[in-house]
Structure formats: C-alpha cells, structure tokens
Image 1: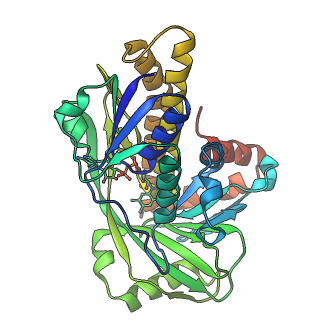
Image 2: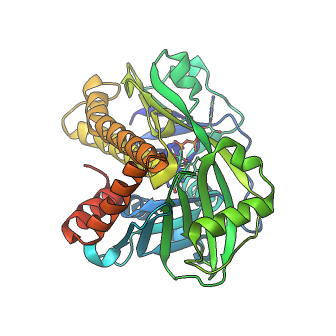
Length: 370
Ligand SMILES: Cc1cc2nc3c(=O)[nH]c(=O)nc-3n(C[C@H](O)[C@H](O)[C@H](O)COP(=O)(O)OP(=O)(O)OC[C@H]3O[C@@H](n4cnc5c(N)ncnc54)[C@H](O)[C@@H]3O)c2cc1C
C-alpha cells in the first residue's frame, strides 16, 4: 500500500482520493481552505458533466448521494448562432443514450464527495496549505487548482494567457421552458449557456462576456440575455445575485516530475464555453488511479516514473486538444467579421443536416477524444 498525499480537496482531488482509496492506497488530503458549508437557497454555481464523468461518479458511489433537487439530466443541447441563422440540435437519441449528461449544483457535488470520502475513512486536513514537507510520501498529487502552489513551488512551467472575458453566472426563470434541454448561443458578445435546473422553468446562466459586462446593472444584463436568446424560451427573469469568474487558459508543460503528479485545473485550465474543464479533471483522476492499480500487476510501485509517464501520455494530449478546440471556438465565435460569421452559421447548419458529424461531435463531448 502506497502513501499518497493530495493537495486540494476540490472535485479533482476528492474524486482521485476516493478512487485511489478504493484501489487500496493510503490517501491523505490537504486543503488550504476551511471545510465548506453547504449553501442554502438557489445555487447559481453549477457544473454540467458528460456521460463519462457521470459513469465515473456513479462507480465511486457519489451520484447516488445527490438529492434529485441538486442534479438534473439533460438529453438535448441546442446550439444557436445569435448573430446569424445557424442552429444545431444534438440529441442523446443519436448516441442511443437516455441522456447526454447532468447539471449538478457544485456545492452539493462537493458535499456528496466529502461524505463519500468520510465513509471510507479518508482523512482531510483543512486549512493546511501546500508545504514541501508534504513531499514525504510515495506520491504527491497536486490538485490545487489553476494557481497551484505545488506546481509553482516545484518549478513546473506553464503556458498561459488570460482572456479578456469573465464568466457571469446566475439563475433565471423562463416563461416557456423546454424540459431536459440545454442551450448555447454563440455571438460577438461571447458564448452564453442556459443549463436546465431541477425546478421546471429554471436555468443556470453562464455568460462568458467582455469584462465590463459583469459590472452592468441587473436590468441591463437581463435585457441583454433576453435580446440574445430571442425569446426562444419566452421571457427570462433573473432570480439570483450574479457571480463573476475571471477566465484564463493555462497548461502545465509537464504533468509529472519525480514523485509528483498534477491533475485537474492545476494541470490545465480551459475556457468554460463547452463546460469541459471539470470533465477533464475527473478523467485525470480516473486514469491516474487506474495506472497506479495496473502497475501493481506489473510489479511496479510508486513513485516509479513509468507509472506517471503513462498517466501523462494518456491525459496531456486530450487536455491540450480540448484547449485548442475551445480556442478555435472562442476566436471564431467572438469574431465580428461578417465573412467569419457567415461561415459559422453555414457550418452549424451543415452539421445540423449531417448525422455522422453530429455523432462524432457528440461522442467527443460525451467521452472526450480518447
Ligand atoms: C464559470 C465556470 C463554469 C464552468 N462550468 C463547467 C462545466 O459546466 N463543466 C465542467 O466540466 N467544467 C466547468 N468548469 C470548470 C470546472 O469548474 C473546473 O475545471 C473544476 O472545478 C476544477 O476542479 P479542481 O478540483 O481541479 O480545482 P479547484 O476546483 O480549483 O479546486 C482546488 C482545491 O485546491 C485548494 N487549494 C488551492 N490552493 C491550495 C494550496 N496552496 N494548498 C492546499 N490547497 C489548495 C482549493 O481550496 C480547492 O479546494 C467551469 C469553470 C468556470 C470558471
């Protein structure tokens, strides 16, 4: 049994800890924050997870711990060009699945993970930031988010740049909702997503818009959402305070060094326009834990570099590919060039007519590139 120290009890760190513990490792978590309290009332901070992540969370016993009110499955995604005439509808029927993914309240998901971790005896040290002494173990897993202190302290370089956008998040109520369907509008003011919540008619809004947009008064923001969504869901009214998150793209050049592995946002942070960052982190957690288990069959034990090299080989290419894909979307969708806008609309309509292309796009969104 190896001793694994994990820095960061976010979604990536917790899911890795549970999977590794179930695989027989001795794991201990350290997080610089105080233990989270579960928020009451409407939650604007949600995460949409794909089929692969849902299967992973089910296998860890986490999905079942969530109340129905904090998770909602969706079976359709409608993507619109808000500056043009393009529209694509992706349905789970094309993949012969019942659903494409879940929208889950972020706090409730973390709470369910903490409960599951506790139930299998994982120890968490709160208000315990990264320190070099945590390296005294067989493997240190850095899951401490985009500004990873572990990554910095260990000198792992990143390729990074900020976007001139922040994500504005809130909950709205629609007068003409469409059940089980998530929506996206691409246009020059940045991608806008509406994700269905469990209570009929309510949606979590994630609008990645120019930075000054977040400081506009509520009535202005509400008018803009209504203008962009063109009454596809009737009239939308804002129900909660708006939260704002600065956006950046950041990739660690290495996902491991001697005795240390990076997972989740500490390894890669991407634009949330397709809601894939958390999915990548869950896949990192699953693959790293699997590699550790498989290596035992081969007689390898931590911190053998071959285990970590295989993890890096399996995960880095996918994260970089997603990062580049998001970048291409970000640039083509934000363009004010009428030629680019026309190509975007025609492209969407072409995909709408082509089930084969739809199937490819959907299986990548559902399960990643691997
Ligand atoms: C607006 C927005 C919407 C998004 N929507 C989606 C979506 O729909 N679907 C999706 O898949 N992804 C989405 N993402 C991305 C997703 O939220 C992240 O990829 C994911 O939460 C990263 O989880 P993590 O555990 O790797 O990092 P984090 O959530 O950042 O967790 C890091 C943990 O480490 C701790 N920590 C930090 N520093 C230290 C330190 N020095 N020492 C010890 N502990 C430390 C923190 O307290 C925290 O608990 C979205 C992101 C944004 C900004």
